[in-house]
Image: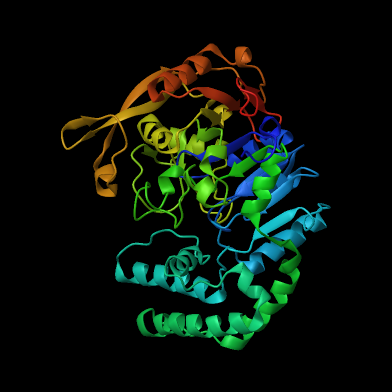
Length: 446
């Protein structure tokens, strides 16, 4: 027996980054939300940074879905997200001060693991220990993301639902705090944290969060059956995925499209279109191999141009992003992993004025030709990029909204990338504002 009216069911789109994050997902999600009634975060935490520019006004979001910038759109934080309640409430208050209605539209899965102060302390102490020992930092944001996911996988996490039960929360907190304090003092040579301040703060925040707690998976199921379009917003990027990225220089969650189902509680058959977001060049924040990396510090170089014109600094950390040519061989890997339906190329305008543009189409690795990003980080570090070179263009692409208005060489560049990776380019972003977009095929209509 079928449930609901199948003809009324909504169409669901997943947006994922195909590089090392910072591809411009927030702007695209905001643009697509004009056709969606709900936006869902399904992994990561407030280590994500989505910057939106709407009518010239810039807003940075870290944990709350980008759909919050559209009136009337429901925003869901799925079970795959780790939630720092202190940060979440701070972000809510900041948006409310800007005049947005948040609490009536935000739904937080009761199954989300919590990030608590000892997770942050462990994260920071580990990075300091690695740096001092000469092992090299992973490059985390030091926001407690990894330690929180560790507790989740070890089946000892405190979750949002525990905030509703003070006695249960206190008992679990004592055990968890004892374990983390043992690590902090014994191995990491850092200070222990006290139980009572953490407990009192958590209980106070729990009262504020309680009205927003929800069975997100079931809420999404009902919204889908009611004909609502849903948009699933990924954080970070495919090459930072804990399983498929440049391990160990990765984040602590699955950033790929398949996790939109597991991280939200909605079945994978309900994900109809996967949109991959790709910069017209490549950037990376933090440590790890980067085959096409260029020097961003020498004035007059391409790397410096990409860094300065692209304003490449991390939304969360403020760190300068490493920059390099587009790596189409890495992009090919991301397309396979995610099952990409179509791509949105962002920041095309940053390439304006360059005399020539290069695209990495493969590598030389230990004397052999390789046409896709290897799986081993050491192999990636040893890769020598093989480039195709294209003539640049003189005209400006900034703010263009029609494909035919692009300079001829810009179109040829995009067409060659499309042919090599085997996935269609359905959108092109030509500037930071939501209206700076060329649409070739609409994810909600195609």
